[in-house]
Image (cartoon, rainbow, N blue to C red; front, side, top):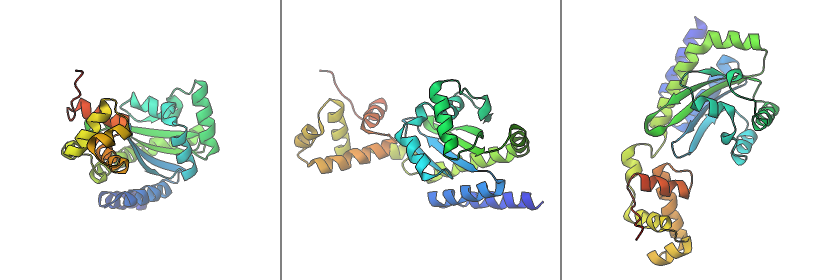
Length: 242
């Protein structure tokens, strides 16, 4: 009964979280409660932007980003093709890149066992809630069997809260590009260099950078190329071929 009450309390805290820092605090408490090495919530937008909170070391998180491991990570690749929770052992680790990634992840303390819950959301959003640990297969099977339902519930609660808290997620906010942002993105889409765009709009390159970053944020884009593609696909900028 004590365990159940504790989980109810943790879920209530998660529901009332007021900021991303509170989500980070919640996931650390949940990791302690379930007595696992790591617990992570990882969000990927349709344009490739990423947000996450969890208990991996900052060194591993930075290395993951620097090496662009999202492209070879069997957990991301495998869960993107699935709608149901999956044990990491059932994913495809056969490629050389995947095996090297796995070895490095274990070296950084991620654990040899994992369980991930894929979550689909609005506007092409894809999220993953993962739990990982270092133990033998039988111990892990017992853990996942006992906790599967609670973990799925927690995963969806995290996703709902992250959607509420992340800025610039709603279509209305994403579409509200200013006239200057539209001008800047249009010229970049036409192939102008940043210097040429700044000169054409009679602004400094620093000011141009502010416009581009603002547009990128509103569009939920990972970089300028993504932002241009998003703006064009939504009809926010029109580039003639003439």
